[in-house]
Amino acid sequence: MSSPCDPHYAPVGDVSTALMVIDSRLRAVYDGKSGSDPEQQRMVAHFAASLGPTGLHELLDGTCTLIYVYMNWLRSLHEQRDEDVVEHAVATLVATMRMMPRTFRPEVIPTMAALLVAAGTGLSPNLWRAQYGPWTEAEMNPLEAVAALLAEHINRMTGGDRDFATRLVTDALAELEQD
Image (cartoon, rainbow, N blue to C red; front, side, top):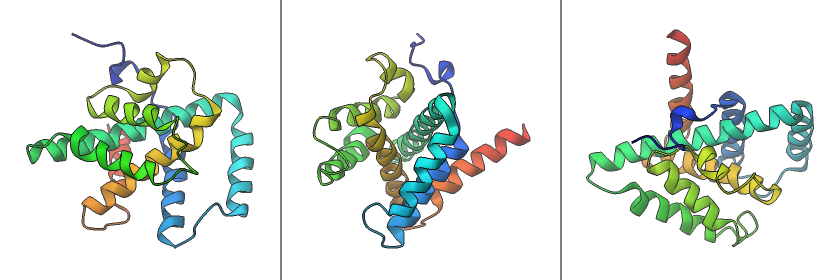
């Protein structure tokens, strides 16, 4: 039986731009830059303003698509090990969120955790979230951070390959272009 939250019905969004934003965040972390770089904040604000409302929705959908792709990859990996992705990956990510109170206020952690569970069980994160109303401004930074945490988690699981999560998506996009 098909769910209204089936990824088949979900908009893909601007995956390339979402990947660029997440990769940029990861590179800053890997380079040891803590906190938000004021210059990067200005660039992101300028970039977001240039997108307009439609572009921001596309970026939001693209970020949710990244979360779905990452969780789908993790689910496949955990199934090969006869493990449950929710038990292993989601629990680890939620514990990490709890250690980052400036990024993840306590009230957004349940939503982000449920978003990961939805994606980990094969549902579209953005369609799952749409059931509960529009995204709030307070959820935007945590959503971006969840995507970055997932990418970093995947990079660590692949032996510390800092570009694995990015390559995972760029390779999939390249395959789509060839088809």
